[in-house]
Structures are given as structure tokens and as C-alpha cells.
Image (cartoon, rainbow, N blue to C red; front, side, top):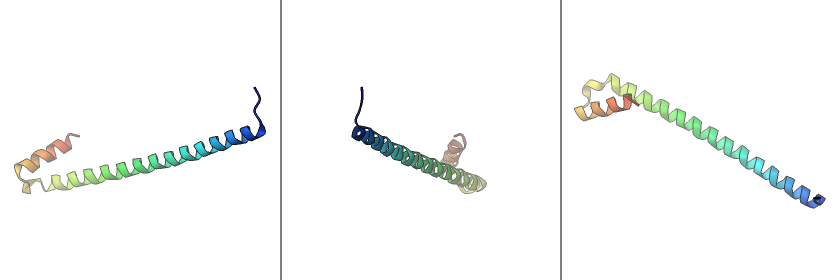
Length: 71
């Protein structure tokens, strides 16, 4: 089966557009991953900070911190 030059160029145009979209999705995924890692670090820093001051928390707060430490 043969395709015309116009069809060939249209197919390459579609492929190039898909490649651009894939690159954009990869960038979005990388950004989301970086944001997730930052959020995790903040969460663990917060738990560590609260852990240091555990003595001032009510019993319910201590229980929540224990649950977070087990994640």
C-alpha cells in the first residue's frame, strides 16, 4: 500500500504533535513527583518537630503522631 506525500506529511505532523504531548506529560509527571517529595519532606519535618514537643500534646494528639510515625 502506498500513501501520498500529503498523507505522509499529515501522519508525521500527528506523530510530532503526539511527541510534544508526551514530553509535556513527562514534564507534568516530573513536577508532580517533585511536589510530592517536597510535601513528604514537609510532613516528616512537621512530625519530627511535633515529636520533639510531644510532651505538650493532649493524648489524642500523641496517638495521631504515633500513627504518622508508623507510615
